[in-house]
Image 1 (cartoon, helix red, strand yellow):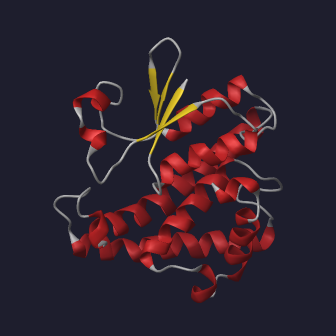
Image 2 (image 1 turned 90 degrees about the vertical axis):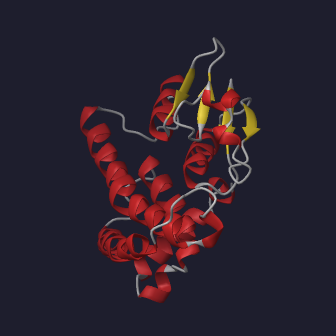
Length: 205
């Protein structure tokens, strides 16, 4: 199988971290240069019609896109260590936590960065700076809520490390482009959690 990724992009990093946590090796990694618009080339669009990374090309030629779908597929092939839940109840609560990280933390951060950072202008045309700035408050509201959650539980979804921690960590790291650091915002539980994840082998991907 081939996994198409892009350096420094948060969603490919989510999948790469997931693979490290699962100790999955052997996939061929193919780098897609976003700044050079390689994701919009006809050859790549034939694999990922929406021009997004990551994308997992299966051995039979079919291509699976969307980070969560790729991780779900890999979890089914390699059930241990479990990162998505061992029964219906746990799976539901872990997915809830992961979706919250996607929609309420990652999305406003991505909107802010894509519309305000000059280095992202090549990927976001046109940029709407006012819209990007408006997303900062939404991101901070979610980060503050997450900090409170981490004051009462060790991990994003509860008592153990899961895919929700991967999504949140990749977001917090990406938010450096917003000049965001949890400790600077008084979010010390979030900072301690971030440092704990960064110390894991997957945090160094």
